[in-house]
Length: 412
Ligand SMILES: *Cc1c(COP(=O)(O)O)cnc(C)c1O
Image (cartoon, rainbow, N blue to C red; front, side, top):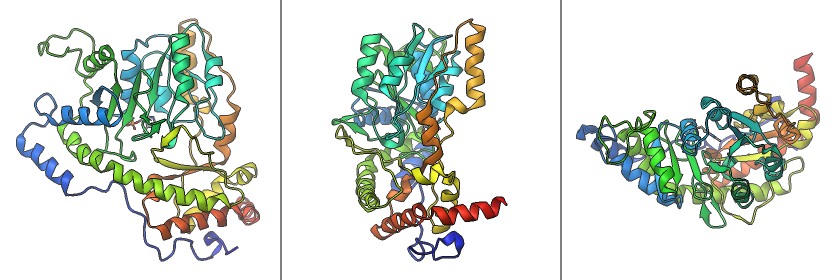
C-alpha cells in the first residue's frame, strides 16, 4: 500500500488534471439568456419560457403537470400545503436528508416526525414509517437520496391504505426511474430543486410535479398569489405566496434538460466502473443493487467506511482523501439530532397540546458516523481519474492505523 498523501505520499489524483466543474454551461444557455434579456419579458407572467420548461420537465419525469417555483425547499412547502397539510398535522420524514425535508413541515405549523432509514441504502424505511403513523399523520415524504429511489411500492401502499399523501422529495433524483417510471410521478406529488449543486441548475429554482389536475390547480394558486388559471389579475381566490421562477432561470434550465440524458449516461458508466473497482476494496461498503432502480439519478456517490467509522476516523478519512485530490463530504448530521428542528417541532406540538412522537433512529445515528459521499462531478471525469478515485478510497480505507496515529498526534 502506497503512503497516504496526507503523510507525504504521492496524491492518487496527481497528474490526472481536475475533475469537471459544475455547472457546465454551453452556447445554448448563453443564447437563451440573451433572447430573454432582449425580449424584455423577464417574468413568467409576461414570457413563455417558464411554461415551456414546466411542460418539458413534467414530461421528462412522466408527470402530467409541472409547476416551477423558486427553490426545492418551498417546493416541499407548496406540495404539503396543496394536499392540505396545516397546523398540527404530522408529516413523516427521514432523518438522514437535507434539512428542508423537515423544515418544510415546520413552515406550515405542521410537525415533522422522524422514521428511521435503512442502513444499507440510507433511504426512509417503510416499516419504520408505518410504525410512526398516528391519527394526526397527513403526509409522508420519502427522499430519493443521492439519486436512488425509495421503495415506492411500499410508500404508495401506505398512502393508499392509511389515507395519507405521499410526496416524493426528488431534489437529488432528476432522471431517476423506478421500474421504468420516473420519480415524481409515483406518489401524489414530486418536488425538485435546481440549486447550484443539483444535476440541472439555475443557481436556484425548483419544481413540483403531479398528475392530479386538482393538485396542479392548487399549486398554481400557491405559486401565483392565490390567483386561479384564467382568472383576473386581482382575483385572489386563495391565500397564496409569490413563488414564481424567472424567465432567465428557465432559459438556462431548458438546454440542460436536453443534455441530461447524455450527462446521465456518462455518470452511469463512471459509477459502474467505480462500483466494480471498489467491490474488491475491504472497508468500503456500497448499497446493494436494486433491480427496481432502472435508472439511478447519480446526484451523489455514497459509501460507508464502516471500520473507520467504528474507530471514529471518518472525518480523518475525509481529510486524507482531500490530500489525495478527492474532496468528499462527511454527509448529514441526522435531523433528529438537529437542535433547531427538534426544538421547533416540540414547540409546535406543545402549543397545540399534542404529544411529539420521538422514536429513536439508531440506523440514522449509525450511518452518520461512517458515511461519506462524492458529488456528481466525480462521476463525469475520465476513466483514469475514476480509477484514481478508487485507488484513493482503497488507500484511505486500508489505513486505519496510520489515520489513528495522526489523529492521536493532532489531538495530543
Ligand atoms: C437540495 C435539497 C432540497 C432543497 O432544495 P433547495 O433548492 O436548496 O431549497 C430538499 N431536499 C433535498 C433532499 C435536497 O437535496
